[in-house]
Length: 189
Image (cartoon, rainbow, N blue to C red; front, top):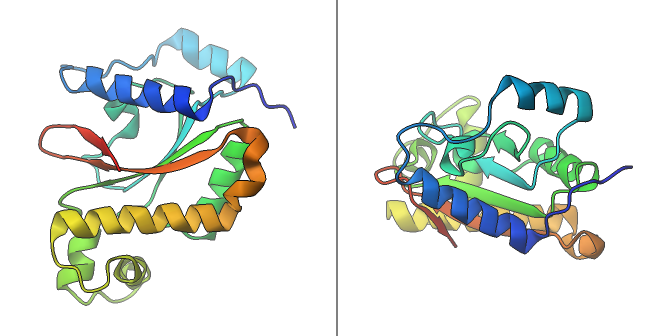
């Protein structure tokens, strides 16, 4: 296993915060998506500095939100930013094979999946998502509080699933964040 990532968890978190600060005032995406970076990452592989687990909501674009380009962040998207074995396997890959030392679970306000868990009784496959969110939020009905509780729950699932303390040599950190749809600000929890 070759790990070539040189960012510590703290350096990666600062890079995300700085990228979000640039995004708040950007008129277009600032990440490098050039032909040169596509060729470079194709030839040399990816070297992401962070894993971002985010909701599938089309208004939540982690690469843009953090002003990141091709190969910079390893993004996993799933409605309601819930965690199951598939997401854990993807995170494990990014940590153990790509050297990522920061995992961020980024929920967002006005989340349709959280609203569905609070106000509706979905059926079929959506129920798997809303049942997980209900475990996280209990009886909470406030959108903001419920979204934060859901993020914190996913962080705990990742920490337990990956046995974070065993990855001490990786300087691994898992944290939660909430993206604010209206102004683009990321609040780290």
